[in-house]
Length: 359
Image 1 (cartoon, rainbow, N blue to C red):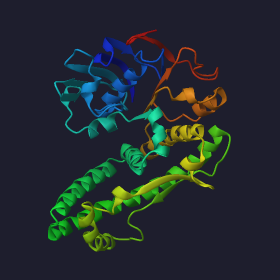
Image 2 (tube, rainbow, N blue to C red):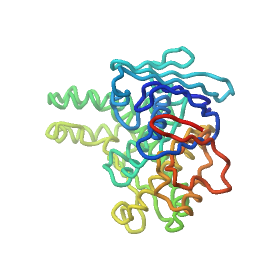
Image 3 (tube, helix red, strand yellow):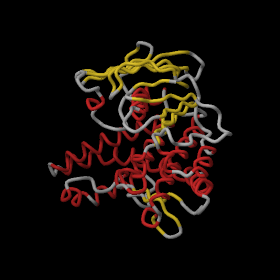
Image 4 (cartoon, helix red, strand yellow):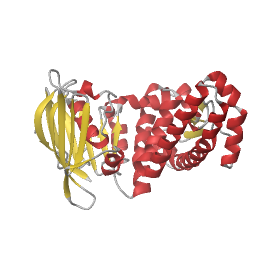
């Protein structure tokens, strides 16, 4: 799948423009605050129906306007030309593919598999456990629709169980235990397999790009320890019911699982330098793209939001050599940066000034 053209209207600082993006590599060159990231955000919004910068799409509307409009033509996996449209006005969003209204954003995700590389990714290392859970769940959901369904079902049951906990209704709480255990066990087993696959790629890739250590790995700590069945989990939930009521929440489950990056010295975010942590977060995204291709036989769209600025020329060259699993890639650079070395294929380059894109 690859985009051909995109029309952007009243999104951030972009007034109205149609941009040709019919190339494998597209580079956006400009100073800060000119519209490079806004362009990537517009693409991401078409792919996910949401923004990677804000949960409130109202913030993406150009100042003084009531909404924004995005539309793109693309070539699907069968070499057929289609179009996707996203509009947001007065708090309401509308998404269509070839004129057909999209109700569940899941339909977008699997039509436009997209991975964003951003500075915020360092939170995979430095952030709260929820950030790493979210990364792995998104990585797995991108290639496995049934996993996404299980995550949604689990969250729905968890919400109902927590509501029952707040009323201290033990009989109602236990009604949800088996369903919570059922979905949780499936998710836990899938996470365990995904971490094993991640660790088969991650340490070597980090070593190649960094030129250093190769003992990094992901440690997966399950909240429900030593369980083999739904019944085992139900027993744990029943044993913890008084504690749950006291704490006013479900205190065990896959929503409490922990992922950590470790090396021979322990937890990496406590021993690694800022540069190492940033590089590690970039490797997370490369592994995500390789994980996606391996499990779907498809290649994602990659968006690089100023992240290569963190790498010296040598590491940048090695890093780019490892990115071989994509259908289309968009890069943002400052004017003074060296974009690619002489061995890289020639990209389509746009100069970006005040929300305008020119060749």
